[in-house]
Amino acid sequence: MDNLQQLAQAVIQWGALTLLFAFGVGILAIGVIYVIDKTQTSQTIRRNYPVVGRFRYFFEHLGEFFRQYFFAMDREELPFNRAERSWAYRAAKQVDTTIAFGSTRPLNLEGEAIFLNSAFPTLEEDAVESEAVTIGEGCCTKPYTTKSIINISGMSFGAISTPAILALSNGAREAGIWMNTGEGGLSPYHLAGGADIVFQIGTAKYGVRTADGKLCDEKLKEMAAHEQVKMFEIKMSQGAKPGKGGILPAIKVTEEIANIRGIPVGEDSISPNGHDEIKSVDDLLDMINRVRQVTGKPTGFKMVVGQLDFWDDLFAAIHKRGLEQAPDFITIDSADGGTGAAPQPLMDYVGMTIRESLPMIIDLLHEYGLRERIKVICSGKLITPGKVAWALSVGADFCTSARGFMFALGCIQALQCNKNTCPTGITTHKAELQRGLVPEDKAVRVAAYAKKIVYGVGLIAHSCGATEPRGLERSHVRVVEGGGYSRPMAELYPERDTRPEYINVKTVQ
Image 1: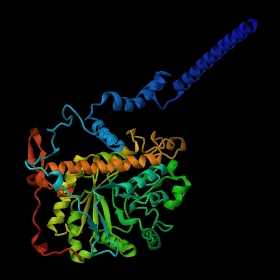
Image 2: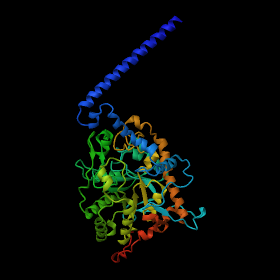
Image 3: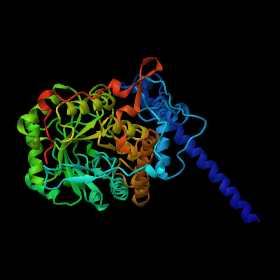
Image 4: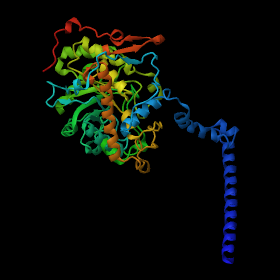
């Protein structure tokens, strides 16, 4: 008993000494911080309010998370509100996606789409599967045929992590959809899942470049030799940064990423803001045809719509050169897109949104008699069935999404994509953060999310009386205008007649 008492007294004494020591160290640390804050000249708040002024920056950081979880309403958070994210999470996890007690989506906001239910909706026995669409028919030795409606948009290896790429690749194969590489080149992880691949050629030509950054035919052939690589997409611009190339911070440029891209290790990977070889619409058509001839596979380009003269010049040049010279597809991106690092002035102010640009380009293709020849892929915040259904009704052949599939992977919209600190392991190369993302589990969610999108679009189509998702037309939609009243989309965006000089244009066979 005496021994126990002595031991207890010793523990208490040592505990008291430890607390006293810790208190002393704390006081000393506060004193040091006080001196540092009082003498530094870069931050006024810290200089005027030493020590306590630091809490301002701490709370400012915490504010992002408090707004997301406690203060923002279901439909008011940007860039994606809680209702949209919640649907994506539930769809990926294969749990109930129904809601109760009415919609929280304001139905009177200007620009919102409303689908018109039919008095005679499509019955289950009348519903059919979407027909396959062929890209590059008559112009490529290896055209691409697919039934997919929603696909994975370009996210570069480097911008997103190895386990994220593996999960997306395996999930895409399971769902029967394609996966775009983004401009960072083709990694073994893209191929590992067995999914169809669209190889994106960015302005820096990562993966298909010479030592001085020019397009290399031999490397193009190497990429095309992969059976999984179905198409090539030349990126002119993207939603996050129209008018500027990709940005990958040096901290993310590992040896493996540098080898795949063909660039130095540990240096910022910044693409040019345009292709050196493309200074005109004829230059663009020249590159498209060069890639198509070398690879034998469908080739198109991706762009945010901006100055409209470009499109008239492009479509007129196609007719002058011949329809076989046309791109096999055009990917229209929205100016409010983008997952990675981008300058805020570009993301906030430059380029048209998909809501305005998609109908415009579809109509121009009709006017020039090119709608059958050139397929249209739509991208930009299309993360729910309603938004995908809208794009199809306007005239898109396919839709793609990046951030929707990031939500399927577990993204919590922490807004850390441009750093190396993503808490869900999606956009970081820190092993301790990647550990939480298990590719085998997340691949199941990726596939489930894609299938639920298609199912949801089908629900809308059948309600409108169409037998399948691609049966949606502008006549099925009304668009809300000022004052909360709506107009038919077909009236707001009427499909214009083919110009007389292009009436007899036929699709290349």
